[in-house]
Amino acid sequence: MTELSPALKQATPVLAARGEGVYLYDESDRRYLDFTAGIGVTSTGHCHPRVVEAAQRQVGTLIHGQYTTVMHKPLLDLTERLGQVLPEGLDRLFYVNSGSEAVEASVRLARHATGRANIIAFQGGFHGRTMGAAALTSSGVKVRAGIGPMMPGVVFTPFPEPYRQQCSTEEAVRRALAEFDQLLVTQSSPRDTAAIIVEPVLGEGGYIPAPPDFLAGLRRRADAHGILLIVDEVQTGVGRTGRFWGHDHAGVRPDILITAKGLASGFPISAIAAGEELMSKAWPGSQGGTYGGNAVAAAAALATLDVVEQEGLVANAAEQGARLVEGLRKVAADHPVIGDVRGLGLMLGNEFTTPEGTPDTATASRAHAAAAEAGLLLLTCGPHGNVVRMIPPLIVTAEQVDAAIELWATAVRSAVAG
Ligand code: PMP
Image (cartoon, rainbow, N blue to C red; front, side, top):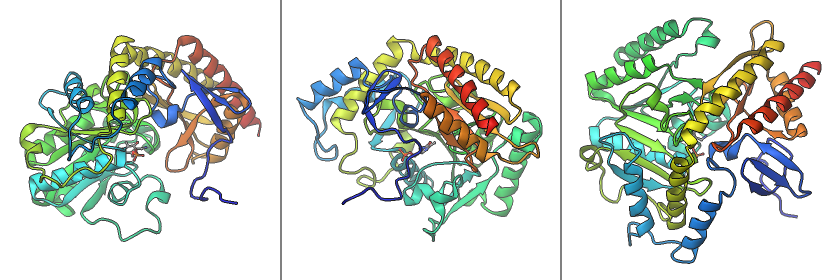
């Protein structure tokens, strides 16, 4: 009998048969509140009728027109549409299929444009599993273990983590920027440094928002040394954090922005945006791939952006995120094992900690499993898997948020009881 590879380890026992809005249904038609959204992908909910309609129409018209051979209208329309939401000046776009590929494309672009080799990434950061993206990823030992040698030219420096460092946000920012400055002296001189790559919210690393002062500090250093700032919005983009882009919370300007997950409600497409001068330094033919900028995915992305705008999903993410975090904090207040509840918008994490202050992965895992058992699908993250995260579709309603909080309270109670 043929089976799936053991590398494909499933986090829940659910066999998904269909999805509708915020709900997933299994083969026996049992309904689950899906607060995973395919890891932050199904931004408009499962099978939003407008996304379905746009994709179906495109499937009957043109499925694939390889973009370095022939161009197609969905990609040109998407490019124009993204222009309405991208930061000013980031008006040249390139498309691939996944977050990892977009990360790798951004590194190529940064190296081509600057003629420098090094990329500064953050401890606890996640940028993907392909070899280049894995080289930039330090969260999750599984991503890097046993596959070396890694791509050279990557240096890591700490990200501010006030909860784990047991200090104020200001102090965590001060320390992280001081370490960053030190790095430029000891390990990666500005002359050798092409780019800094940063997530506006450390995602797989445990849902830790980058303090605005930290991103502003990186921007200043990038400007001072001619280093490019790559903002990895693969998980935080398209409204997830309650602003259109995660970096909007800090008001900094990226040199290169990459976005993927929520962009097309589940169709594989990712985009790299940069200014004209920078993008013109990419060597023709150096980027892309056979399936990049697929016509159906582009049509789905266009429909997604329309739904996000017309249904006010960015504002809804901010509003429902505030409601969710308030409920989660109440649950945490009853259960000291949840030491921290944090995040931005609809990207929230609950960190489980033992009374001794060490990661409590066992209780987090039990709470995650109990929630799934009760009908609420969640994910874990963090270097020890002790952060239970919630990333519902951006269409989630107040009633669904309240239902999830209730299920979560029950799951945590049973996890604590052992
Ligand atoms: N960057 C970030 C910030 C991510 O969260 C992820 C995926 N979790 C990636 C890159 C990689 O994306 P993909 O899995 O689509 O390759």
